[in-house]
Image (cartoon, rainbow, N blue to C red; front, top):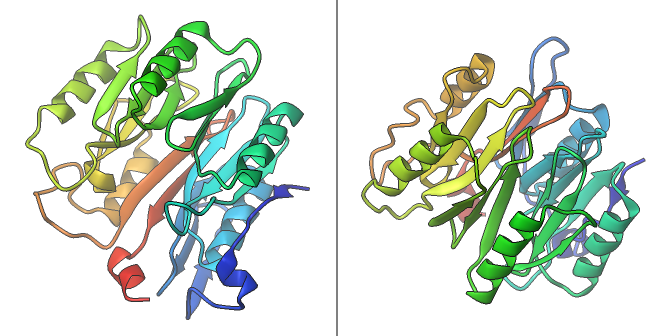
Length: 287
């Protein structure tokens, strides 16, 4: 059974976020969850059934799921987006270490926002909260910990941290405008990060998320979630799914609006994946 700490004032008030939801589920193809006026959507393939059900529950509640992360043992955590900057976000988990669960609960009890959570290939973990605070497990890599402390001391936000299958890491901070990486981090990813930062500024965050498959393939969600960059051997079924959501990714003209923007992608230990996206930002504004 999953641990559910989804706290929603709107649900307590008996309100509704969506109408006319339609859900199509396939067995041999990705599960696609869609709605005419819903805040969250996802496409999943090969992830645990309880994680799929948790995502489905969020869709039915009209809640925006903006982060999903998998531990090496198959455990998982889903974070949803807070309703406001001073409202804590909810989370759903299963099969996580008790210390991580305790820290998640402590953060929530302090009414602080959980920015992200990440797992190393060996199962160590870090939880970023309140902009640049963090809790971490014992034996968390010291070089990554030192960088997190430096960012914290500069009072910059920490948006995401991702690990390669061999334990190298990258931290995205300052609302996507800064990136920090470990020694011996993949050079092709560094080159692409630098290319993104050399592009003319837009209204969008340059980098939203970076993720690695168990086979070391990588993807960068950029341009405020409207563009993607990926390695040459990245799974084409995922690229095809994304291109159906964002037809012209990754070359998104400045100011162009599309119906979907990507939020996050997570890979399970068995190479399953879950892609989170916002189906219609303009509709959300009209609710």
